[in-house]
Amino acid sequence: MQPQQQNFRIQRWVVMLACLLFVLKVLAWILTRSVSILTDALESTVNVVSGFVGLYSLYVAAKPRDTDHPYGHGKAEFLSAAVEGTLIMIAGLIIIYESIWHIFNPQPLQQLDWGIALISVTAILNYVMGAVAISKGKKNQSLALEASGRHLQTDTYTTLGILLGIALIRFTGQQLIDPIMALLFSVIILVTGYKILRRSLAGIMDEADLELLQEMVKMLNRERPPNWTDLHNLRVIKYGSVLHIDCHLTVPWYLNVHEAHREIDTLSALIKKNFGNSIELFVHSDGCMPFSCPICTKQDCPVRQHPFQHRVEWTVENILSDAKHRLATATGVLDKTA
Image (cartoon, one colour):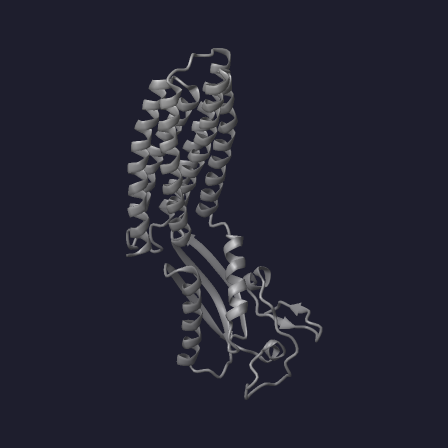
C-alpha cells in the first residue's frame, strides 16, 4: 500500500474516533455539568471538524500529479494542518472564556463518578489513536496526519488534567478547582495549536527543514563511496509526504555516462532506504577538476594531479552551497569558489 493511501486510511479512523469521543464527552457533560468536561467537549468539536478537513486534504494529496500540478498535490496537507492549528487555538480561547466565566459564576456539579468513567475511556482511546497517527505521519512524511495525532494526544493530556481536577473536587468538595484546571490546560491547547500552525506555514513557504537536512547530511557522510568527490547545491522541498531533492554530485571526470548514472542510482537508493520511497531526486552530475584532487579520497585514481590532503566533512552549510568545494591549504581550510 502506498504511503498516501496509508495516511488516508488512518485519517478515516481518526475521524470516526473523533465523532465517537465527542458523543461520549457531551454525555459526560450532561451528567456532570462540569465546565472542564464542557471545554473538553468543545475541543472535540475541533477534532471532528479538523479530522474531516485532514481527511479531505489527504485525499487531495494522494492524487497523482497532472499538468496543473506538476509537483503533485502534497501542499494540501500543509493547508489542512494550518486549519487544524487555527481551530485548536480558537478552542483554547473559548475554553479560557468559559473558565473565567465559571470562576465568577460557579455551578454545582453532579454524578462525578460517571463523568470520571466516561472521560477516562476517551483519554485512553485518544492516546492510542494519536500514537498510531504520529508514528505513521513521521514514517510517511505526512504533516497532516502527524498534526492529527498530536492534536489527539494533546486532547489526552488535557483530559487527564480534567480527570485530576474532577477527582480533587470529588474528594475535597472545592468546586472552584473545575474552572481553574480548565484555564490551566487551555494554555497547553494554545501552545499546541501555535506549533502546528507554525510548521504548516513553514511547509507552505518551503522553509528548510534543518532537522531533516542534518540527518540526511550525517547519513551521506557515513555512506559516501570514493567516487563521490563532492556534493553541493542540495535542496530539499516537502510536498506533503513527498520529498523533492535536487543536488550536484561531483564524480571522476573520466566516468562515462552509464558509470556516472550508476553513482546517481546509488545516491537515490541510499536516500530512499533512509527516508522512505516517496522521494523525487534530481541530480546534476559534475566532472571533477584538478582543484578537486586534494579533497578526493579515491586511492586508485589513474589521473590524479595533486596528492590527497584532506577529506571534506559535509555539513548543512557547505552542502547547501552552490559552489564546488576546494582546499585552499593543507590545513583543511575550505575555499568555496566555483
